[in-house]
Length: 142
Image (cartoon, rainbow, N blue to C red; front, side, top):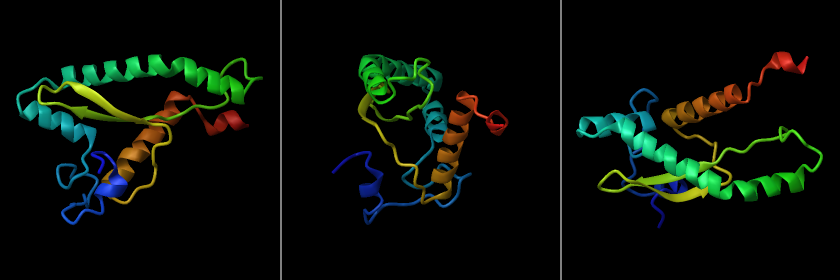
């Protein structure tokens, strides 16, 4: 039905769930770290693939930035510093046989539910990275 829809794919009779956060080479859901190691093992330049993925994500964000800014200003008209909120976008990217990245979809509200140790690890690290990028600290509340 949908190549990247985990909610659908996990119900398939042949779906294999990853049982451990450190063994990201087992099961149908894998980490980006595993994917880049696999690309290297196959004799390709994973750094070049990552740069291509970053490039397509940046171009996509540049394309939608005016709409995101308009939506933000509509919801937060008094926030002249543009600092009241942020948004995490989920990019579903397909690599073709030449390892060229293609964006399948951008999720406006990606799921943060977890049902495997690997999923929990990946999403926990994402949230920690976001907190660090936002320079948030419990000391700033005081």
